[in-house]
Each structure stands twice: as C-alpha cells, then as structure tokens.
Amino acid sequence: MIEFSGQAILLDIEGTTSSIRFVYDEMFPFVRRELAGFLVSNWESAEVRAACNVIATDAGHTSLATWCGDADHTAARQLVSKEVIRLMDGDIKATGLKQLQGLIWRSGFVSGELRAHVYDDVPPALNAWHDAGMDLRIYSSGSIAAQRLFFGHTIVGDLLPLLNGHYDTTTGPKKEPSSYTDISNAFGREPADILFLSDVVAETAAACQAGMQTALCLRPGNAEPPSDHDFVTIREFGEIRCTAKTS
Image (cartoon, one colour):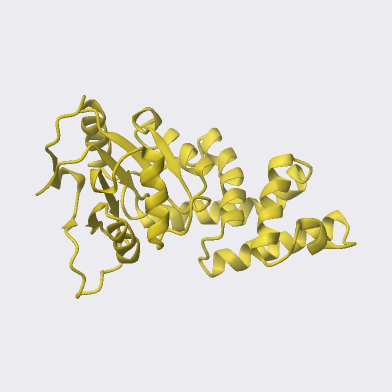
C-alpha cells in the first residue's frame, strides 16, 4: 500500500491500465490488416492526409507532397503503407503513425470488433478516485483520438466520463522530463500534486525528475524492470490509498 496526498493522477495505458497483449495481439494486427484498404477508401480525407503529412515529416521530408513527388495515388499510398509497416515493425512511437493508427482503429471500436481491455482493478479504482474528486488524465504514445476511442469502448463499457484530459506525443516524448513539466502546467497544478503511473522505468524516471510522485506498475505480461531501480512498485491500483481532501 502506498499513500498519495495529491489530488491528480496521470495514467499510462499499455501495461498500466491495460494489457500489453491486447495492444500487440489485437490492435496492431487490426491496423496491418486494414491499412491498405483504409488508405484506398479514405485517401482524400483531410484527417488522413494530415496524418500522412506528419508521417512524411517524421521520416525527414518537408511534406507528403514532396515525399511522394510525381507518384500517382496508388504509388503514394504504397509509400505510406511501407513506412507505416516499417515503423510498426520497429515499435517506433512516431506521432504521425499514432495519428493514422487512431483513425484506422476508429472503425474497429465503433463496429464493436475491438473492445479495449482493462485490468479488473481499473474500473473500480477510476470510479472511486473520480467520486473522491481526483483529477484523472491519460498520457500515452497513442494519439489522443485513439485514447478516447480506447476508453470509450472498453470491455466494461464507457470509461471516458471518468477522465478529465488526454496527452500524447504532441506534448513531448514520454521519456523527457520537460513533457511532464508541460503536463503539470496543463493540469494547473504543481508536479508534486500529481501521481504518475507507468510500467516503464524511463518514463517513471522522467516524471520523477519533473517533480511528480510516481509508482511503477508490475502487471502480468510486463517486462521485468531493472533490478537496480528505486521506484515504488504496485501490482494493482487497489494498493494506492489517496489521503488528500478534495473539494
């Protein structure tokens, strides 16, 4: 049991609220399966073009247009598809990739084919914290749009009303302390008033350097953390006791 005296909790998703296996066994394969057809059907969409433009700039080009050059639409889509698969194969947390993945996942969540996994302890903890007046927000490498889809379509229903905000890599890399400073400012709170929960030591370290309180999540299926870390660890959210009086 750990005691938290602040009034805000910032949550990672993968390996923290939800199983890594769901992401890698269901969500990523869905993108690979749907990618080519999705690009054909939605190539002229403004939000798809915007995501592809970010993929282009992430790859070092000035824009999608300069990247594709004189290629026709079919060749341009193939170029984007190849880069998406390369990024996914390398498990690279690129902003453009995450934006496009979120657009593809939308159809799966809306249709009901995808329902986000959450650990059994997560819904009761979120509800209890919310009812106690805690300010609950998400920080994930997945796009904000994908986060909203995820928590809006879980195996236990819609959890979005419990959450007050979302942050992704457009705020900054998850392993950089400055990202957590910016998030603290967005909360409108001192960093020490925020508890960050993650399964990644480097993320936990970055949040700690920014002044946040932290706990490292040891969920089933997560990689074993280095033996020399000195962070507080938890195996479920029920081990967190919130002691602050909230208004």
